[in-house]
Every structure is written in C-alpha cells, then in structure tokens.
Image (cartoon, rainbow, N blue to C red; front, side):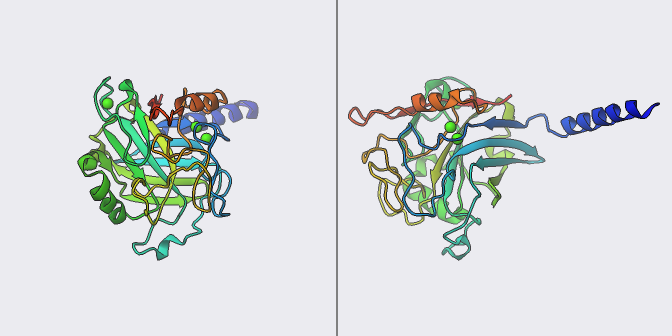
Length: 276
Ligand SMILES: [Ca+2]
Ligand SMILES: [Ca+2]
Ligand SMILES: [Ca+2]
C-alpha cells in the first residue's frame, strides 16, 4: 500500500469511529444568535452582571448516559457566577444568572398533557405540543426549588423533574436527569421546548415564578424590560422555533411564536420541536 492510500483510510476509520460514539437516542437542537429578546422587544436589566449574550440560547443537546440523560445547554456568553452561588443560604451550582425550563411532550398525542407553562412564565402550549414533564435547570439547590414548587405549583409536582447534578463550564450548563424520572422515554421521540429565563434569588413578588425573574414594561437594575407589567407577556428571553436548526429564519419564527396581546390577556402559544 502506498502512503497516499494510507491517509484516506486512516481518516475514514477515524470518521466512522466518531460517528459510532453517539448513542442511538441522542438529539441536538440549534438556535440562532441574537434573538435573546423574547418576542423581539425585550431588553436586559441594566446591571453589568447581565452580560450581552448570557440569555441567548445557541444549542441544546440531550445524550443518553447509561440510566441518565445528560442535557447540555449552550448560550452566547461565558457562564459566570457574579452572585457567588457557593455562599447562598443553600449553596448553588456555580453560576448565578440563568435558569432554564425544558418542557417535554412525552406521549406525542394531540390534546394530551398540560397546556400552561409553570406559574410565572406566562405561556400556553399548542394542542399538539402539550407537555407531560418539565425539567428545571437552575443555579439554585433542589431544596430551594422544591420549597417554591410546594408554594406555587404543588398540583404539578409529579410532572416537574429536578436534575441530580447541574454544573457550568465555559458557555455551557450541563444537567444530569434520571431517565426513569422521564418515564424512560427515548429522546428521539420527545417533543422538546426550552425557555431561557433568569434566576431570581429573592422571589419577592407574588407574580414571580419558581425562582424566575419577570419581564416588565421598563428595564431596571435587575428587571428585564420591553414587555408588559401584567401577566400576558412571556417571562423568558429565548426559545427554540421553526426547525430548531439555528437558521436566521428562526428569529422571525420566534417573534411570531411569542406574540401576545396584553389587552386581550392572550399569551404566546408555544410549539414543541423534534430531534432527528
Ligand atoms: Ca438564540
Ligand atoms: Ca403530550
Ligand atoms: Ca430562539
């Protein structure tokens, strides 16, 4: 064999080896950059901690790891811990700003499942996108999250899944979730949607969600602006839209998806996306 033939064969072997390392059920979604503005109007809080891109979803991966699913969420800024989560009354997970809710349509049956998002998020799910499970990925310890679930969403407790581990590195937050907690569903068969929101440590306002920040009409030091002071505007900055492949057309699709009408009290209607 001549050296010129050895090189392509070596590359082929490596390529096949890499392709073979992905488990059958793994799924990945992409989201365009620059759409961390909810329905198109939202502005970050004014405090410097809320760095540009921190709430701009770029990708979501769900991988099978034995009896767990490893969920990796990417944003368009380094994940930081300006509020020192190690010193919180119940120590947190090494980051401060972001919090995520991942809604799953497990049964794929139109008309089956929950239509409303968790309290404080202000969104409705379309009839063909109703959810059976939601995973909360937060910098807060599970103990703190559970206490808010008991106050604000007790009837949904069985449907809320908390990771066994959450960590942050670079621009990614990673969460481990037990497959059994999701009914052992194959990730490829799930309808998926992710809401990118902001961790609210103090939870002082009654309209707040489960340790999630609201969006107001005007931005403030710790308040997102560009929404409405009522309970119709989505309280999250970014979602998956369209084909969830990261194309620029998905920016327009997100604006359309997150349309709301405060005067008619009509919330945004969310659609699930599916992996391939
Ligand atoms: Ca984005
Ligand atoms: Ca469903
Ligand atoms: Ca988006």
